[in-house]
Image 1 (tube, one colour):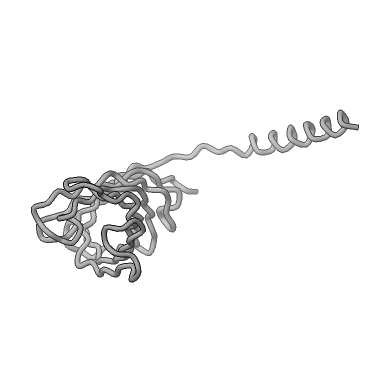
Image 2 (spheres, rainbow, N blue to C red):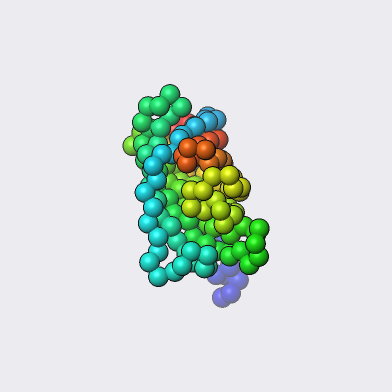
Length: 171
């Protein structure tokens, strides 16, 4: 009985595999670079967890503009403290998730970054250690997008986000 069930399962697996293998299609990708400036962030914090404590969360949104100063969309984001600095000079590690809404489509990014004490709350002259975030997907014209995003804090307290991504050419 056991051999009979094993043979039946193998037959079904082979049939399913053959169907799936014949459905494979080649996909082309375009490489795109998108540079966006984030202005005037609106910040909200978790009311019950203090800054500097694990789990401290900041939510924000900000208008997005192209380099030619035309409005591009809006950014929604959050940071959650996952590694708290124990000594002066250490960075607090935060999980960041940024969602860029551009041209009625979304680009979703996620990863971790380090924040020095002075850089956390819009102070200038402090190091802000932003590691690249992964582009993990999108909607609309960015469905299937992947790549990486780099953030840079500018002196006027805005951010420049450079997204290097591959977007599939859909039929």
